Length: 387
Ligand SMILES: Nc1nc2c(ncn2[C@@H]2O[C@H](COP(=O)(O)OP(=O)(O)OP(=O)(O)O)[C@@H](O)[C@H]2O)c(=O)[nH]1
Ligand SMILES: [Mg+2]
Image (cartoon, rainbow, N blue to C red):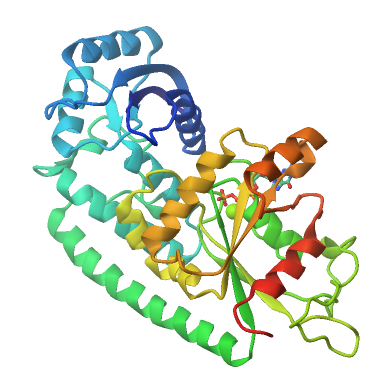
């Protein structure tokens, strides 16, 4: 059964504060990704949060009314709440309260497929939950199952503090092993002389579609936020040895571009592409930390390919968020290329307008395999050392 959700959108007034309509749109998409249905939404001033409820008394009353009217049983806030605020709101509104981090963790818990992915989500969930445990129970489970109560792979979340602490130690050790293993894999690839390009971007920009189109991979693609959690690395070759149907229509090898070496068939060197977890505004810090093992793929890449959904009216905003997250990861000094995707959805005038905003960007359509020759040529040109 889908959870009936009332969204609470907090307006902020800083220089780079997002438009509340955009926040509402994104929170609705996130809620749908967590299998919830938005039945009501309320906007409140987020500038001076109260320590007890975040929102003012009058808004709490308005929330109670909205719940009574619509039958919503989950409240989702567009910001993060302290454990005390969440608890008070639950008590006063009689609905489960989930904040932004809780919602994103819930989506991640549903999406985690590989054992690595599950471990990373579990760690982030446990670290989030620990300060929220009240007495013997957990606030989130008091009002029944649903959004915010799921562990990775549909397991029930552990609610015993002592067990959680032990489990955190264990998971951290496992993740350390995973990091070492990944580092060894990258080292191996490097020894083979292969260059690695990390595909990064806002969630739903088309990163997995691009990986699939370039390499014939079968990465999971879906029109919803956070379809991908696990990084996937695949090889791109101008003339793949084994022809894959996904590469049909790919076209001719790229033209030489100065420093690149060609083999006897005129093919440039193979390049590795890694698809990564999507970014989002205010990506919870705990999550960035928990995903360190996989995000290291970005730090270690020879070049970063930023993919932006050019058909989104928030493209410029998304680009800014991606830059911020890359900076937070310590990757701002890396060589980067910007690809504006989904240009098949744009008319000529719109294409010209967005190219004006991002003059250095390459226009592509991952779905239609357009702009790939230029993209590959630019990648080979900009890879730090001559291949
Ligand atoms: N029209 C059009 N749609 C595209 C294009 N590229 C991707 N899409 C669609 O955009 C949606 C998201 O694509 P994904 O490849 O899953 O996006 P992603 O960046 O990997 O998303 P996350 O893994 O959620 O971060 C899917 O519905 C794709 O079919 C494109 O070039 N044109
Ligand atoms: Mg993806």
